Each structure stands twice: as C-alpha cells, then as structure tokens.
Picture: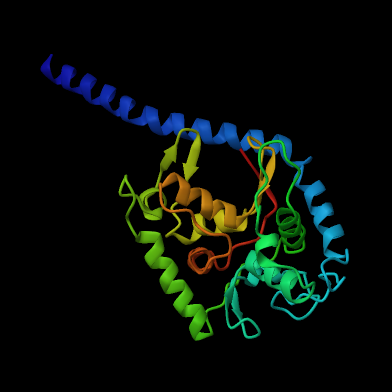
Length: 270
C-alpha cells in the first residue's frame, strides 16, 4: 500500500512538473501559428516600398539622393550589406550599425542636420512610419536570406564587441537588471513573449536575423535601435540615445554571437 502511494505521488509530481513546460510549448506554438497566418501579408512590405522611394528621392540642402551611400560594400551597394554590419568605417573613424550609417550618409551626402534627422526616429501608435524606419526596412529587405557575418578584423570592431559584452552583463537601475537577466538563460519568458538566450549561437542567430520587425501589437516597424532602446526602458536604465556608441557596441556583441545565421528581416512579431 505504501509503495503504491509513493508511486502515485511520484507520477503526480512528474505530471505537475511537466505541465508548465507543456503549456509553454503550446503557447509558443500558438504564437508561431499566428505569425505564420499573417506572414503572407506582412505590412512591412509597404514600409519597405516607402523606404525605397526615400532612398532615391533628392533631399536636404545638397538636393541629393542616398543612392551613393556606402553601407560597407561600396557606394550604392545595398544587396546583403546589412548582414555584415556593424563594422568599422574608415571615413567616419568608428564602428557603425545600419542606422547610424544611414544618418551619416544623410548628413554627408544630403547636407542634413543630425538633430533634425534623429528628432523622432521611432513612430508612435497610429503614426505613419518615420523616414529612418522606412529606410531601414528597405535596406534590410535587400539583405533577406544573406548569411550574418559581422566582422571582427579591425581593432575597433573587437573593442566594440568587448564593450557590448560588458553592457550586456552590466547590472543597474532600480531593479538591478541587466540584458543578461532576461537573455542569458534558457526557457525564460515574459507573459507570452519567449526570451531567447542570446549567449547561445542558435537563439542569437534567430533573434538577430529577425530584426527589424513589424510589431502587430503596435502596428509599426520596429528597428534594432528601437529594440535596444526599449530593453533599456524596461530595465529602467537612462534613455539610450539613438545611434549612440553604447547602442552600436551592444548590437555588435549580439551580431557577432549570431554569425552564421540567416537574415530574415523585416519579419513579423507579436
């Protein structure tokens, strides 16, 4: 009788322990099915088209287009450029991600003011996409399917990655959070959102390759800079400035971890 009781307790305990795992898998499967249903009509395609139009439209005091912007593969070469960013640019003398590089080209080629360009990099609820969101979506669309290859050949690229790693693990703010608090452990989630372990190659490749993304819940394309900004906000850190060295360093760290993956952006997210 005692043996039977112990056997029943063990079986019940195993079932209870398995329930959260099963529920988590079921939730994640449901979210993926939801994404799959919407994938054929990703609204980001409209934003990409707007970005293409902006790419070829003369603007600024110099009345110039961005068609000669060097994104790392030579002036005007857009195809697959994003898969090799962030990287060191000799003309700017620093490591840049795609968004800081676009701002640089808008300043140097079109003669525009940085403060004016970056005054509102992210759209609000119900707003049309910003110029930067549109340009980013267009450029990423030209890199879909490319292999992620964030370089680590120049000393500045290595330093950027090292600084990014320190930022990733730095704990602070009122809750003593870090990026690693959410993204350095397996099988964590916030509400319905799974939290990839970005210290592992597979999850890092999947996460890095899927940004920027169209957020259905917000009705907007969200860029990688926005993703970093919003993570800092949720950690209750000081506001992360658009295109800052800290943001580029963190993106460099994540990109190097994702090397070998595939660019899938602009993707669709909850």
